[in-house]
Length: 538
Image (cartoon, rainbow, N blue to C red; front, side):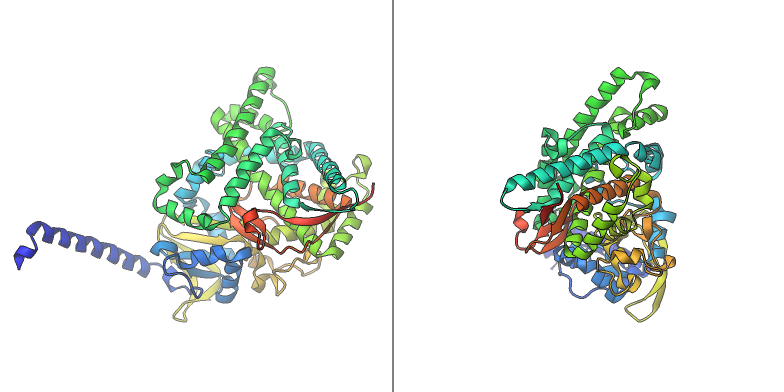
C-alpha cells in the first residue's frame, strides 16, 4: 500500500504530526505551570466566542461584577477563538502587583497600542516602560494643583457659557413649556471640550458649536456608534489575529484618525503662533501647551511628540469627564432628594470668588456633599471600566483574598506564563458587594460622609479615594486633578441653575471605546442620555 503514501507525503504528515505534538506538549506544559486553568469559571460561554461575547452583550458590565461576586475576586474566563484562558481579578493585592509594583512588566497588547497610536499618536497613552516614565515626568508639571488653580477662572467661565446656552436652548425650544427633554451627554461633552481646549492650548471651541468642535464630535460619535453593534465585539478579536487589517480604510478606523488630524492641526497652529511671538525662553502662559513647550525644549522632545501629547490630552480628558458628569446627573434625577440637598449646599455656600463662587481650594474642601456625589459617580460609572494587560514574563501574582480552585484547594497566589492576558474590570473592583456592602451597586453618596461608611483600606485598591477609576501606580491618570475639579465645577453650576428629572426611557450602559449610555430599545439612535431639564431662577 506504499504507493498510496508517497515518500514526500509521508514526510509531510510526520512533520505535521511532530509540530502538532510539540504545540500540544507546550500547551500542556504551560497549563501545568500556570494556575489559571485551576481557577473557577462562570457558567455558560459560547463554544467559539467563550465568555467574551457574554460579557459584551450583558449591559452595565454586569457580567463582570456578578461573576466576581459569585465565584470570588480572581477567576478565569474562556477566551474567544480557543485562545488561552483569561485571568480576571479584582483582588487588591493582585491589582497592586500588576499596576504598581510591576507596572512595566504588564503592558497593553499590540492591537490596543496600534489603535491608540491611530487615535492619539505615540503619546503617554501609547508608551511603555522607560519611554512612559520619561513622558510622564515631562507632562506631570503641567497638571499640578497650582497649574489648575491658575486656570480656574477660565474653567468657571466655560461652565457659565454652558449654563447660559442650555437655558436659552430650553426656553426657546417651546416657550409655552417650563422644561425640555435634552440629551445631557451632548451638553456635558460641549463644555468639557471647551474646558480642555482652553486649558490645553487656549482654544475656544464655542461650547461645541465651532466647526472644529462639530467635526471632533462627529468623528467620535461615528467611532463609538460603530462599537455599539456586533462589529464592536468582533472587530477587536479579528484584529488580534490579523492586526494588519487595522490599516484598512474602514469607517470607524478612519474616524479615529480624523479626530487626531483636527486636533493636531489646531495645536500646530498654536505652536507656530507662540514660537513666532515668544521666541526662546520668552514662552509664557498657563495652559498645557505653554508648559509643554517649555519642558519639551528642556527635554529635547520633538514637535510631533508634543502635538501627540495635546491630542491625547483632548481625547482622554474630553469624553471621560463628559460621560461621568452625565451619569452623575442621571443618578441625581433618579434621587431627587439628594439633588435637592446638593442644590441647597451649593446655594448656601458663600465662596471667596466674585459673585460668591467657590475658589479652587473651596471646591476641594468646603462642599462635602458635592465631593461625595462626585466620588460616588466615579465609583459606579468608571468610564474606563475595563483594563487589560499582557504579562511580559512568567510571574507569580499574590492574592489578598485566597480563592477556591476547581478541585476545592485554596489558592493564595497565581502562577502565570508569559503572554497571559490579565483582565481587571474596574467596575467590579469599585462595586463588589463583598467589599462595599450589600448596597455596593446603589448610588448612595452618604457612604463617603459616614463614620465607617467605607471599606477597610486593606480590602480596596490604593487609587484616588480608594477607587480603581483612575488606575493606580505609574499608570495613575496623570490628569485626574483636572478631571475632578472640572467635574465639580460643572456639576455645581448645572445643579444650581437647573432641576433634572428622569424621562420614561430606560438607560443602560455598554462598552464602546469607553463606557457609554444608550436608551434601551433605541440603541440604533446611538449614545445618548435624555433627561428632562427645568431652568431655575431668572
